Image (cartoon, rainbow over all chains, first blue to last red; front, side):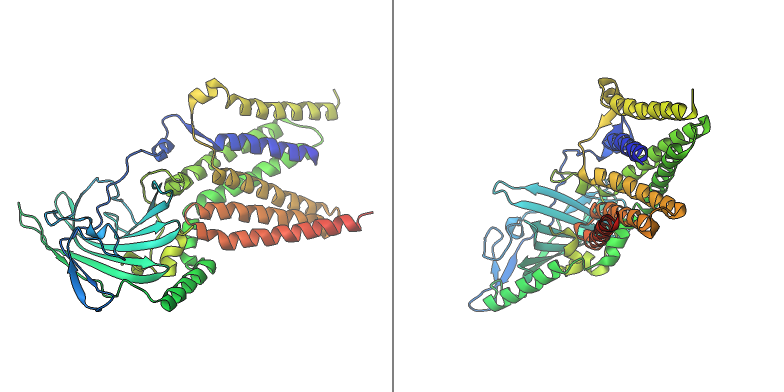
Length: 323
Length: 127
């Protein structure tokens, strides 16, 4: 028994040592952070309107104004800002559907996470979620029109969320511009007052807390995530079992033959090959998450339900990305 | 040389072969031929959990077929093995979604607790 355990431990050691390594010039090098953060101009506007907390009436605000309850990104645009266009190979453009996560920490030590959701055909993100310290701050949904050089954003819907409750929406609509001219943007409104009553705030916080605590909400999405590398993992399990069986055979055999030795070495090599394939799969599909807090780019292939791609901040759209 | 001495010699050779390969990966020569990535707990747990789980499962099968120590001897490694595999699966899933850990982690915990109880019972009943 002790020999078996010793072999298993030794084999695990060498396999683990290999797990932390990568081939020189191999495919996995591409998973290292590129240091090139994507430019995320996800909102542009010319005018905005919010509901005055006192009068409950819509009132336009200047582009550079800052009102309570409005994210700075909303008012960051200028009147002369051109329509948002994205080139084919721009950072943040995905080839397939899935999600991409970008994390960073600001000067105030707040951790931000930007989650980009892509439709099955890839392209620019269909939706974006912004988390601060693990709490959802806003969601944005985009509509894009294909152009010869990339895409142009035709519509965006931003929903500002505090403590799980919607506190405002912001919509932009861009008309496709004529050649040489900028695209006008029509600005919209907040259809809810930005100030939330304490009762509603408490109810929203409780509901969101329950949704978070009772997660996972979207088991189907998790299954898909697991299924990303299911074949590779199953192969690795099989190879590990074969290696363990070979170790048992070696220790139990009355005399070690060249066949047993070669079988053990072959099992070890097969184990390494399948492990390499598994790690490649994991890194390729989840490189962003594995990279931790660094800035990086890429998209995983987890599917999203249609409402998530439309900017929904329901629990099944946000729970997978909260801390 | 007797078969047992031959057996021991080859086992020792295999052990030293594995150690030599492991050490070779750490030498400047090994580093020069491989691009090193920072160690990732997720990957290590997936690798160790899967390897340990598969080993325990094989051990359970062997114990069941050997019939030594009753059903406890076979079930105990099975519980450990399934727990380890679920733990590996937890980290495999969490690489995409942190919340996906819940089900598999709960299952791993359950099997580990059952295994611990079985082991404790086996110790208390053994002479």
